[in-house]
Length: 415
Image (cartoon, rainbow, N blue to C red; front, side, top):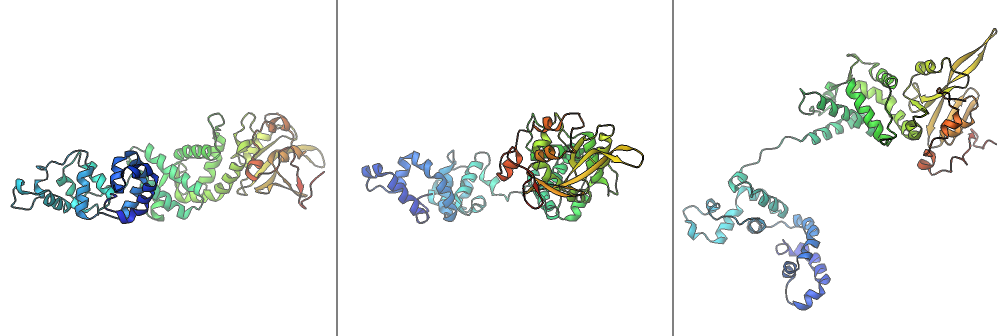
């Protein structure tokens, strides 16, 4: 390779010569190529550089044939190469040069276009096949399963901008193909119409959702939180609410509509992953609807609360809590709800008299007097004191949990 591409590799050879001063002192007039052959460790050192440079200086066909012979792991049998000879000449009169020129015209070698790396691969194939077999035009291999799924994901990304949501739908298709014995390969997806024809079962979506949420929230074997049946029912109701097919089948259009709510909600879920992974006690109820939340709070004391994802405001959190409602005749415990936005600034709690910003979710719970205990009966300070990771510090580089305090809308800190 070095001998046939000196012009392109001149700088490399100069570097080699300067790095081997001891060798040059012994063999002053020996060219660099000979030095390379004598010092095999140096050959290994420059191998990667050579392989990157040789495509820039392809060999001519004769030198390609020479290289093919030189890189063969076994000697090419002249009897095997008899068909390379000029017609009418007997084997004994074939010179090595004629043989190499004839070899250089073989279709298999011509397809390498003088690229040394391709010639090397051809030599490896000759260990198992004869030249005549390699001369035949290779049949185009069908696309691999991996490349098919990459094509599907590329098409999905054209219609679903969120990368995580797009990968979730591809995961659904992958699991569906694996579970469905009648489907041996991924579907052909080239446009939106092809995507609309793809339908997966709800069972598949459950499996894909659990796997992806675990990955995105960086759950470990100890902190992995399984989605409850109640949470799965809530997600299914949002995914199939506009479905015109059976409720157990999810179309791409259903999923695309679902992602309008799920994508920002997932971003919030990842932001509060510390609370999400805390299960004893359960700090964050996640995928729970308004009516399910009220059912969980009924019969509980005043100040009992839970935190969940908002149904009506994608990406927001909602707090459902028990409060006293006075009427003209009696006082009742009623369930109330308030919303909070989540962004880089922190957690902004909205209520009847205004809004307030908190650095962390723990600060919000600690300072809000209407929130007293969890549905399990555990005091809020005891429960939220178990959160180990300060996600606000990790994501924004802010102060510690102890030093952060809530701020009013005008930006001033509360006393």
